Image (cartoon, rainbow, N blue to C red; front, side, top):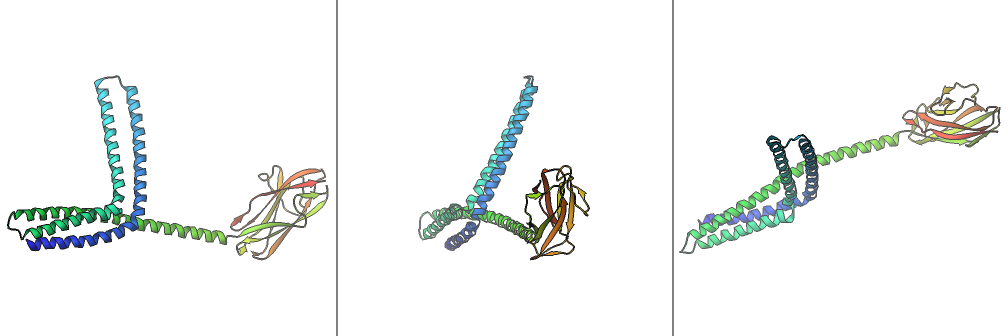
Length: 317
């Protein structure tokens, strides 16, 4: 038996080394374990609240329908009993969720298993020492049996910690893959947005708000250039004014959604607009005979870009 006792002692020493390795793994995943436990507890709390609301609604309905007969009371008791069982089940799940990450703390993964293996080592050593005694030989066997029980309990503790580590490692890898995918998708979106052309408008000469003389023709010049991107294909400049204004020699389009009772004209750039170049869109406007202040709107378009509607004022004197 002395050899068996010594083998048990060596096994305890080896398991103490395993405890240290398990703690190294557990420490790297403890934050993830706490986060998972919080999410699980939050999910259980929401499920319990939904269960409470549903149970209350059912009980109110049954109370409203009851006639105080024995069958009705039995039905109410059965409903309450079912709710209590579900509530107890959810509470047990919440406790298990909270205890899972406890297996990865210093106390759960190092202190308890290490102390267990140390006690088992001491008991196995005491059993080995007991062999030399001539009286009560069963005492050594009792000490060794107790050592084995402690050894088994410590192994179960380490195994449960490893199970939690395995589960968290798998979920962590999945979460990292998801985060990497989201980061790559966000980077691609940012790159696409950075390469998307963006037109900038800047009036040349006369600046808004404009001031025209009644019943005369005026020229508005707007410089359009790339504020972002390298090339803008199909650049367009749209200008809308009330129908009292005329655009000599240009085709007009209804623009009531811009300005009620307005029409618009479109100037198109015949070549792709490149970075560093400015396209000057010039349009002639004939002011009405009546004087006053009028609203006008303008905006720019190109492939992949839709400029916002800008508003200005035209005063006719």
